[in-house]
Amino acid sequence: MKLKFVRTNDTIETKLVIDDNEQIFDYLSFINKLIDGEQLEDVEYPDDVSENEKKEVNDMIEKINDIINEHTDNEEK
Image 1 (tube, rainbow, N blue to C red):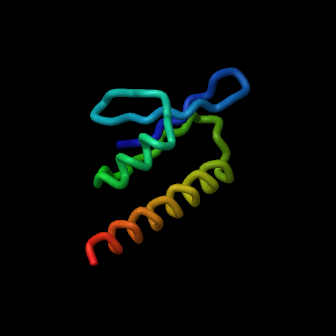
Image 2: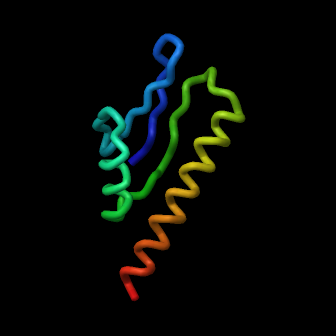
């Protein structure tokens, strides 16, 4: 699974790509996939995304992964 960011006019649209199937990003689907064991493999950015924007997204993903890992660790106990 990967996130794909696409610039459309003045906004950036987020897509969720699973097994080469691209769909509109939905937080609930994304979180459920992570809980079900899907791994976030990659993030694809348009060329004009700044390093700061990339860092913010990467920080957010890291926090989400930490929460998911904590959740799964607690379920296993």
